[in-house]
Image 1 (spheres, rainbow, N blue to C red):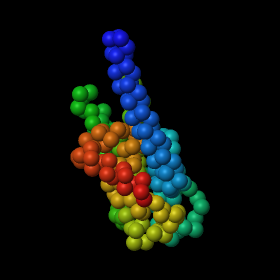
Image 2 (cartoon, rainbow, N blue to C red; image 1 turned 180 degrees about the horizontal axis):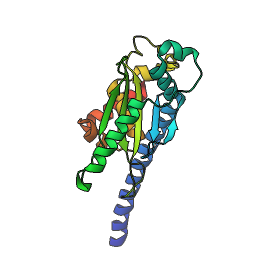
Image 3 (tube, rainbow, N blue to C red; image 1 turned 30 degrees about the vertical axis):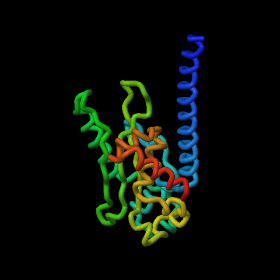
Length: 207
């Protein structure tokens, strides 16, 4: 009986943990599905700056960056990833390589268009493999900061009803969840309490 009671406690703890992981996985899956439906301009580059992923919204963003909104609206030719963004990736890569193994940080850099500063790209180093020797990738999130006041500046911007409802902090939490971070890790990342993160997630689901 003593052994059974000990095993029962262990099984109960394991089941509670499995339930928690399942709920977290379900929430993450729901957020990933939401992001798939929204045209968030996103680019993923390898360490050698070769593209891994670029969605249509990101291609539209690159076109607006290169040609301006008016010409981009009527031109179907694909634009390359802006050289300013690639140059900043190279700088970030050099900084990462120069830092010691114990001080390597996954930094964030922002690049604004020289003539249209409302066009902004946020570059983050993301390690997609758990292997210790694996080099990180470049995750590039593109934004048009005039979308709310001029929703048709970027092609497809008019189709963001769900995204517009989210605050900047809520969009950040969505991104971190899709990166696989737990609620506590998100709280540490954004400098907030666990209870506040849970409130944000509840608000996101309601929206």
